[in-house]
Length: 140
Image 1 (spheres, rainbow, N blue to C red):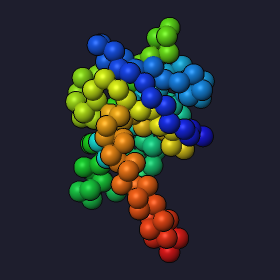
Image 2: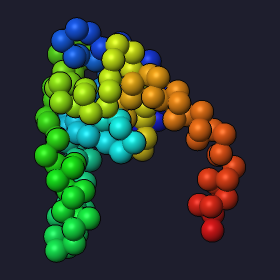
Image 3: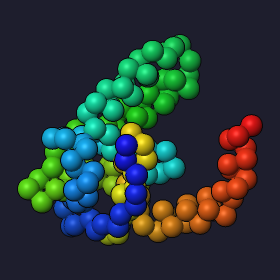
Image 4: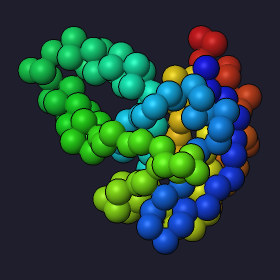
């Protein structure tokens, strides 16, 4: 299970280092794609295959299923780690997530999320301000 929050810097080529703790859990390679809330999702191959299986079992006749499947899969790309533990994020994904120089890599159960640092801080501020309300709504 992925958890924790780490600050990293994107280099001029769009590469970002993935913490060693997470690299060990991801294995040889991973899949990066558009995520929700304008971040990127990074899955291990096994977790990505589970996602694909879930989506393949949804009814394609439903417009929202088609839209979500297109959103996730058309933006997906396999990535490998270089000798310094970095992955290369393609420009279209960096643009989608508005990634600048400073980024956050956050662990969330079966995936990592990659956020622009400013966007992450803004999101976190709102979420932390309403955490009790969110927890209560999830309990019911």
